[in-house]
Image (cartoon, rainbow, N blue to C red; front, side):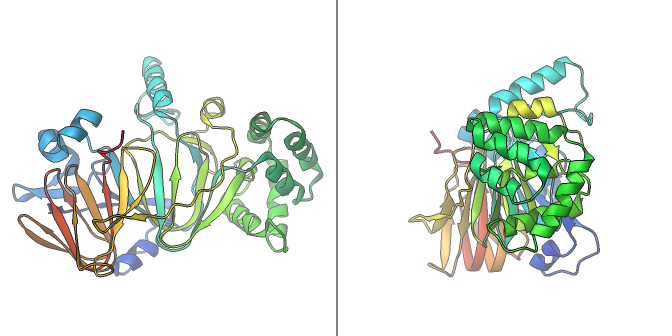
Length: 397
């Protein structure tokens, strides 16, 4: 078991205060968007081995069975299959979607065959893995996720009171749903700045007007202000607007378009860099590949809450085995919680005063800090606080 030294990632949409305030330190003025905890080769956490800090990916590479355990090594190979993050958004992120495993494998092979360098800006597939992810709000967290029903899309577009939107509303009301969503989304991607600017003014107006879409229009107004004249605003109108309360989670599977608007949360995802962007970004947008990956079906926002177990863990149920996220609250139901140890795990403290006890001693875990425990090492969380635990679901069928 080792205390982790983690890397802060700085992006333009990040918050200058959220992560420092959580950790109880003074902000340094930079936009701290994400705190990465794991073995991602771009920014691996450091753990102390042989008296020196070592990158976790190198530690796993040198002893994969010791670090990962036989079930994880057999299923995923010699790598940690998940990445844990603190995500702090002060401005909207890009509108994006992730491929499924088969699509990622085929796309990676295809682009390798085309000789596209892995770091090329026009590259869609940087590895052959899928990227399901989950976020749990630590405060209020706002975003967009999944398509509205065609009827709901039509109602929202009509509420903008723009003549140019009438043709799109008519399509959404008269064509079968999947075909309607695909057609309107595709045409929105090809629209020019004139309609984007008209919609920008309309959402700003409607955000100040009482009505069934006022909260959504306020979110779209935030997007338009952060990304002026970006055509991604138009397809964003087709997505469900959501707001999570503290402790509520959201799972994002393959093909589901999404974007976070603002908020602080714990995020866990499969280890992949495969992102196809729909807009709200200066990065590469491949509309043809995007249309191949997106699932054009109405997808309601399904808020997740954890289920308590006999061990004292509260587990968020997700349909993947790359990661398993749970929350442990020592001092709430019981003084200490002992966790299973078949797979490697990362423990992140988000509130209170806790310590993690392992076979070789005890580590105090201040808010905002984390520990890594390899497979085969039992740990107990004690104290009075909240700890998020990321591991691998080795029980998944």
